[in-house]
Amino acid sequence: MLLSELVDQEKSGFEFDDNVWYRIRKEMCGGKMFLEAPAYKSGDLAALATSSQVIDVLKHSMHERIQNGLTEFSNYCIGSGIGPDKPVLTTFDADLVSYWNDFEKEAEQITSQFEPSSPWFKGFRSTLIQEIDECLSYWGEMMSGKEDYLIKVIPVYERWRNISSNVRYDSPVAAMLTSLFSNGICRSKDLRQWDLLKASLTFKRHHQRAWFVWQMAGRQLQFIKACTVRGAGENDLLIPIPVVSSTYRILRPDARRIERVIADQDRDFEDGS
Image 1 (cartoon, rainbow, N blue to C red):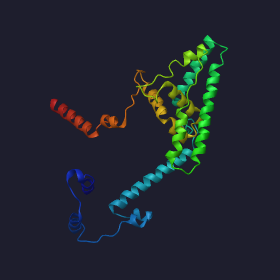
Image 2: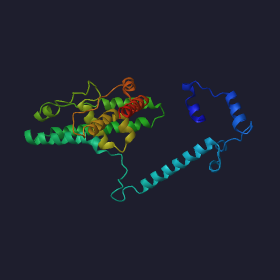
Image 3: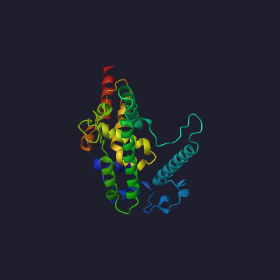
């Protein structure tokens, strides 16, 4: 009861001051005005197990759970990949590379059907890979410096963001494959088809360099993943809609209001029966 009051004291108007603490010690602690210091203040973890102080009990319980969780995770990592029910821990995600893979498959089919001798797509892919790899090298150079992180990362991000298609339209294959490159989602300049393809290929080549990949292409990769998961049901047209943070706060479900609605529904059901 006391803990719940302390947690909600600002909302309930309750204030736990020195006078209240004095009265609690006098009325509930057998007149002991000076209590022993809790075991956690001494840093002795072994003493937590025998202490009856409420914070010691909570810290002991939390410590046990944390240690058990770390042990389970460590054992999982050590045994990862052994047996059919233990997948290997990996940074790879098939959903995130599917966007590029689907485009590549379509490009090969169109090339084979309309212009089998065209080297356009191979040159396009080679150039894009080279620019992404150079961006990764630039990342390594910048991150080795001692400047503030933002000073180091912004030039790398701008370089990755400015990687353009540079398409030569002297091939019917190029015209067909690149006709939708500039199309965006919800008028977002960062979610054009070109940006999503670039992000997917960046992830495919360098997913093990997770910090680089997610700092450069995190927004696009999140969108690709959301589309893949959202479109896995019966209605593939249900794509996620990006919203700004201020709008998200408005749209975020209110847990307390939901609880009240459910309670009201249950009460109405009981009254009706």
